[in-house]
Length: 374
Ligand code: GCU
Figure (cartoon, rainbow, N blue to C red):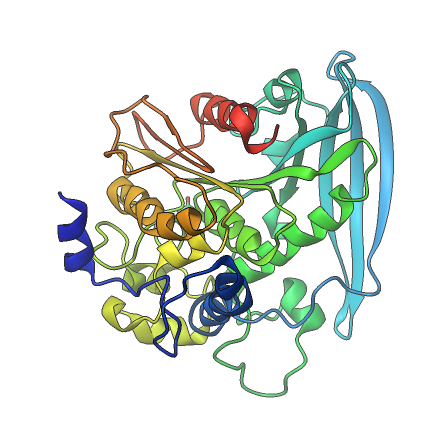
């Protein structure tokens, strides 16, 4: 498919045209007006509005264990504690800092959506879903949090998790109130609050990465929080990296039906009406510019729709060009196992199905080595 045909078929909102119809021609106009406007549209219509940033009550409690991973790493188990009018909460952050080489180290913060077994602090049960040993061996600190600490992944009216702690409205929940992906993104930013203060880490070289629902979360956290230097989305699909207009596999209606708690009340009104949505997901990727972004897809993951994930990068590229970076420079959709590393944008398509594998992680780190975190 030619790019022009695709744009025509999908009729995307123009990322470089403001709500008042003015063309955005400078970085100043982008940063001062269009970017904040886009974030506000995503808050209003998709993810919801977070009622609190960094809570004044937030504290970190850290337990440090040297000599883990057979001496290759220092383990830090951090509890991020906070309090709101609805009570107290905590997010647990597990961090392995390399003990060889020279710090401060760049880091990958992984937003784990598969439960604590994937994060085994003793590393008896090593899974390639979060290959902390490989990450450390390549000179990166490996951090992970369990998304369910911030908000259980169930549809229960947003009463538990951080919603119950910080929400302040009475009666009916506002249609733009934050939903579960926004609560998870909030937790990722609180983890960043800690990582930015750890002297073993380089606060300017921290990536946020997630798979699938965790990848949707990484994109929203990265869009809101410019402290993340690199955002990695693995197979995030619908309402993640993939364009909604013209998307195959999971549609807005399908995701709202099965996961009504992920997005806000307004998003339901776009079921079957992708064309009416004032945003599309290329605008979320554009909000990351000029920071680095890496998107990965899998051939058999038709539910996420690799072509729509790749197309969103191409459609975000004008904003990267405005900042002086070529992005993927018009590269065609690649063959499997043929990663594309462009300026501030990377992409790969992997053989196989919906999963996060050692192959994916090695490419994320190759891209970080190639400049995103160096
Ligand atoms: C479901 C959902 C996807 C999501 C995926 C996952 O398949 O429909 O949107 O990305 O779960 O999180 O693994």
